[in-house]
Amino acid sequence: MSDPSAEIQNLLDIERLEVDLFRGIGSGGETEIRIFGGHVIAQALMAAYLTVPDRTCHSLHAYFIRPGDPKIPVIYEVDRARDGGSFTTRRVIAIQHGKQILNLSASFHEPEEGWEYQHKMPNVPAPDGLPSMAELRAKDAEKLDPKQAKFFARPRPIEVREVNPQNMLEPAPMDDENCMWFRMPAAEGHDAKLQHCYLAYASDMNLLGSSLRPHGLSWLKGGVVPASLDHAMWFHAPIHFDQWHLYAMDAPFTGGGRGFNRGKIFDQNGKLVASVAQEGLVRRYKPAEERK
Image (cartoon, rainbow, N blue to C red; front, side, top):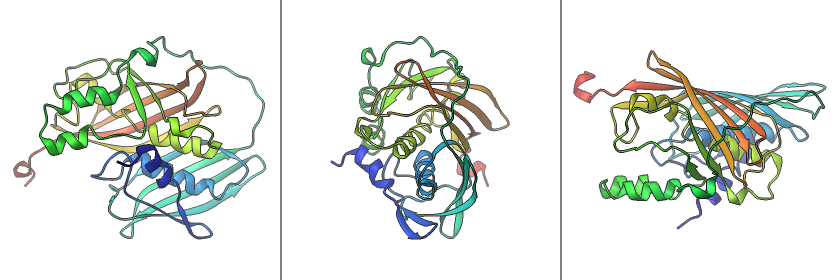
């Protein structure tokens, strides 16, 4: 069995085709059905990083335009929008089948000193006393058919421990505010650009689920079509993703077939290292006969 963490490292080993043109693999990582949103964000960020040798990303903004096809590679076209005195800007277009599947803008910054302030980390149980997502999913998988169980309980590249997990098979309405600890032990010793890409990949995990929780919905139960529409991320401090980080999420609004989700990422010492915002599709599922 392949190491899921190695799969993430492999998908970030993108190939340079031309000066500002790159190719990344479409398979591997979080899902086999369509390309996981964090997968294409991480690859697009890596493509941008390969044109910015001396600065680190402080923010990115992405739109998911079409579902990604995991059966073929993804082409990334980087536009060197600006190389300024202290900020560098890149635009990245991800392409499959001749069409855009994602647009991403990223800004890179020279290190600067300045005033510092942050919100406190929520007071939640430490990760060591919580069951892992793998353990919880292994129990739920026993209630699924073999094919669905294999996909649901497959090994994942990011270790996750939820503070107040949702019952994916029989979800009940619950608070949109939710927290999880996550890490990738294989990230130890890797440079800043890889740490950013790993965290960007992981930042798409569970976030849209915040919009589903108040309504007693889950993608596994069915009845809802969830999909990420856009994703924004800000990096505030150095990342060491081999260590535990707390992802504190909420969803202040759901309506019009969309849900708005926010996340704050703290290291285990309570330092706010990144912030995330995402709007997702939360559409009622209609059987094929009703869509005719």
